[in-house]
Length: 497
Ligand SMILES: [Zn+2]
Image (cartoon, rainbow, N blue to C red):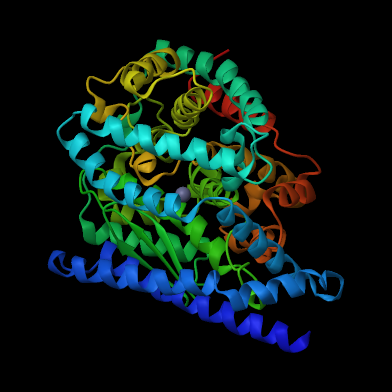
């Protein structure tokens, strides 16, 4: 057994090294590479992806895994979990006919270009046929994998283990019943606090503040960098090389602050994974939802609180000079200004989850045969009106705004909303262990990082999201804390009864 285990380790390490190579190529394409070099880089990515795929599906690896599966009781925790994860992935792939899988991959690769064109030209009809096919493939694949379940449930479980329509329906119902009326009463007040953060700051000063915030939060610059890109993201080469980006907009200088804090939340998670998981399949976040819980915890719960800024507001005013006549109290109102907007990625903390709900209801409706793809623009607008009270004037700002569906990322959106809910459940427990107000006021953020590291980060994928949540909070998904938090915070800010 030992020699097989050793060989297993070797093969997986080889695959992980290829994954790291791919990450560097992706990084290059999205940050520094000249336009003219992108074709070559795409080819290199295709080439190496194929090698990584061949390794994962090789007969040798399959045989070893089959053998080790039967020796489960003799394996240590990490090996056991890794074998389990690997078998699950293979099992999924094996149920889908390879030719159909290939056709689907080609379809989504092409669909991204079509989506871009449709968005630019504000013309849903050219994308419609592609979107229809993408949904149909997902429905078909879900049925292949488990004919006894609704295919949407099969897919939801891929992104967030243990998740299904029943849980999400309940969860979104809670959000709908609580956030929609809260938003309406805020809108009736007609207060605009955005004036407190309007201003211009040079890119140079913004870069300095981003760097400062990264250090302040505990992002390790010896094993990470902050760079720049069109859309902020975090990319992990491995736990010793975690790269985040932000976007510096001169006339919207607060944007870089919060995207930096958000991505640092992802980055600190990746850097905090236990060293012993390096080169294993478990050196990754537990799930997309848990990952978002970390970024949103830093961005919203900490970053949009007043205590967080108390020790560092003067520092910010030095670089963001337009804030010098704005008090901390006013700044706090500014960064928590609520405005129902059309675009998800620009949404504030309160309205964000409503955007996700619109997408969830649409996806679910298609899988259940209730909605037709051709009707999506109208359905989209109707739901935006109902929940957010705003209606897009065109599809570019409506149903065509996100690339996710074109990439085949269906069932992925709910993870964003789950991240919000998880973050509050985790925070609620953390408050019992730590005096967070005091920690923030004294600027001792390493204590928070250590707590998260100990309870979440170090495990990587060794535990699934349900296990992590249960161990920390003693319960499963519960939106109560999230809703209470929003109600309390925004009632205070907007003087609601
Ligand atoms: Zn994120």
